[in-house]
Image (cartoon, rainbow, N blue to C red; front, side):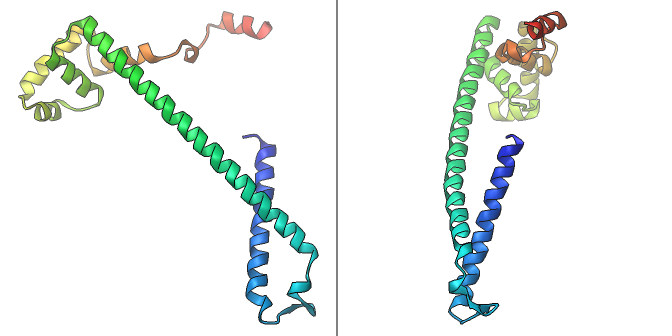
Length: 177
């Protein structure tokens, strides 16, 4: 958000705060016959227009900000669902390519979720030795030496080329054009 928008929002928030304080005080004190410099609070009119404007702007902009926030959250959830589906597709593609057994597939999924050998063994109802053997088979079939490289294999397939830094020669040509 640029500075002009931030300043505008702060000004509107200040107007709304001012209007709220004004109307609360008027409401609380008006019935008690309180005066300001000898003038009944009900007769102090010029401020009311500014106060009402502040409240209206606050309500309108509050609703707009809420709507934009909800739309942004919905877009983020949709993007997350797409990423989850894509990640599952990448996993399945590699599992087929590596010819993993069903048990190895389960272990590989648990590995990508960050579970340790003991937890995987408990969840699968097998021994830690079996899980270690399956883990080693997964690493061998995938051509990696550990969990980090296994995860990198999946993440690399998900990364968009636009996230990668460009070589300096291409950067220079893009800025020159």
